[in-house]
Image 1 (cartoon, rainbow, N blue to C red):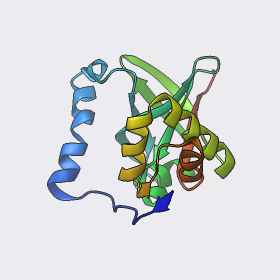
Image 2 (image 1 turned 180 degrees about the horizontal axis):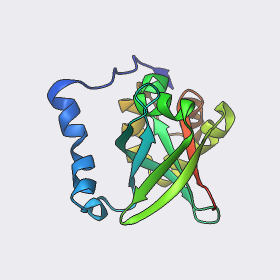
Image 3 (image 1 turned 90 degrees about the vertical axis):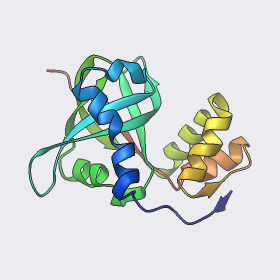
Image 4 (image 1 turned 120 degrees about the vertical axis):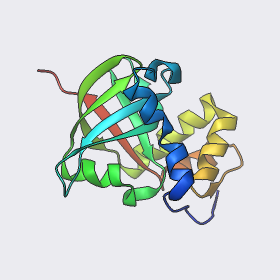
Length: 160
């Protein structure tokens, strides 16, 4: 694995395009995105207002009904920083909504998770790593090494 420069969060037109899926959820069309994406509603760390972002699901555990997402822009992503301040949030996958709490995964668990993701989705895994600033050769070891440098968050349901 070769570490290239991690991209900065998008601005301007690119940011608007990347936020378009949020609009699909607002129009109750989030189901069109399938189960590979989720809408995360979280609380702003400074404003206290509800914020929304659509994230790619890296893993879904059927047994615990939890989702794992990656902080592609690192710990500077607003949603990531907001979850560190207020770990309680809501997710919507398709039409289904759940109250969740964020658990921040360690480096070894992140490495194992990325190795698994790369084995299940090899081409997408390479592109995903590249978009986060990592050139991988597609081997499990390379995916694992990249995963050790990516910040993952498990969103586990809060039972009432």
